[in-house]
Image (cartoon, rainbow, N blue to C red; front, side):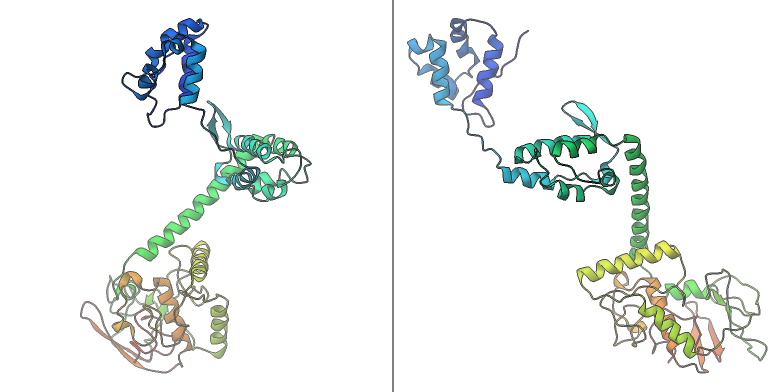
Length: 410
């Protein structure tokens, strides 16, 4: 069998002189030292540094393989390899993690496939030996704490040596690991889907009147109000108390719908206000810090998980407040959560404004806390239609989300 040996340059980057010498000896096999001495220059790159070295040797040295090999080792000595200290092995041992998302999968090690937890145990065995702790139980407790729960519950208890601990990991039933890993991956996919839905909802830009047009598209107003014609929220689904207002003229921005007489909502009471304050207090309003924003994101995900990405914000489904914004009912702008201006004069860009659900929640709360009173409100739609509403009262929901407590109702 002919063994190919790359010519030796002597100064080529990445070239290892010891590897070349060993490859040359393998290629020579059981040939005599005389044959090795005769063939050696043929394995040196012509006009290279190694070739110049060879030409500088005396004829007596060139004729004897033992002298050639000794001279080669002097010119290209074996590199000093920096060995890892026991402390470096310890750091690597504590840093090597078995990830939950990799459980039940295979990886290739030395040309053969093995499950990830088995490969991890093999690596840990090597590191424990390098650190000089394989005969005892040092660091086993720390490593066990960082294991995925699926593995940790199968290696409970204490182990006197690393060999016993790692054997316990490697002998866990693979079906148990695969079934548990499938459940973990499905849960992770659901979590990612929730995060994606929240991000999509927050990144969708809306015009300043998009929310009103969406809600008022289901709204009808009677142009001839009388004692028998009342303003009322009409529920079309069980979880949506402000779909629209019934009337005889169709709705302002959509198709027509016949009036559906219903009992109008009762007046705001001290009890209903107290209950709403309790719901507000139950959701912490975090500061504008990294920790606060992370907690706020978790609150949003929890809300979506409980009510759905398209769920309705109501008095009983409170929505979290963006960190660093003004508190509820502080005269804040519903678009950005900052005091000092009304919604119609909000200069915050659309993509930086509050989530639509938070705008609705702030407007809803402000409406409930406002002292109930009879008013007359004139609304002009985006299509130029002017409608008049009488005796709306303090629990009117139709125009939430446009501005703040001192906005459209002034």
